[in-house]
Image (cartoon, rainbow, N blue to C red; front, side):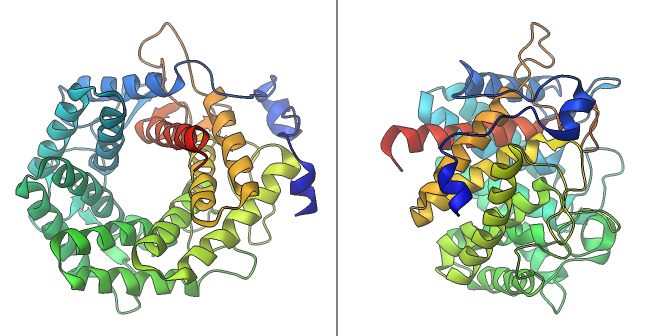
Length: 385
């Protein structure tokens, strides 16, 4: 903690192998470039337009162009658009969010779950994480518009999650990505707790609790998680770690169980120490928190910054506040601003763009998480909380 207290400002960002490989410095940013949040929202709208307003395109690929619509991430982009609409009064964003939610109902699998991949024919099998992410969008729309169709779709999805949960609380095999359990499904637990409140169905709270307890069981004392990976044989990324932490802390906020908040704090502090020591967050880590990547996962950087800010709101820890603001500002400095509309306001998966996370791509969720974290930063700087 002494290191953190001495670090009143973000250290110099021209560091290590990443800068050497990129042959240019990581941007040293104080504050946020003008219009960064608006540019991210504008680009998310473009991802909707290019599909004929049938979901949000998964990504813009530098070699292959626009990718098909992706139900998983379209689901949680809905909430980002609705939040920005509430902040700005732009009702066109509510219309877009409604169109996305209606499309999600159209492509919901007959079993109630959500397909594993971008839209294709025949549709992919249902998987747990994607299903949970679309529940968020339906609940956001139900809360905003009061339309029972969205709650009904969310309940069907929750019932699929209940049916397919393993005895140990996980989803695996054919029911989740890569056939393995994932700690980042704590974010599914967050969605299930919201669903329990909206539907007044306590069984969804029980499903969430079983999985959350499993997540705690695979956390190490130093904050690292087993099974915090997308595929076997890989290392946890900042993206997956941020998913896990956010699911834990929001679940704690909803059900009052401080064990989940404390678990999120443990991981957050480990990453915060790395951030202040290096001046940036490498994309992946082994169980001793040794960096295993020479690139930054920009998506994860934006998400982790947002997690630090949310933890500050829950704990009043000013070190988390300072780290969160610095990380979000660094992620904003890596946003692409261009006269080329296909990427103006977009956020690459990695820095450099050829890094291992979503190489040569601008995923829709990268812009979504930058927008969310920028909006949270604005609220905190605006009112101190």
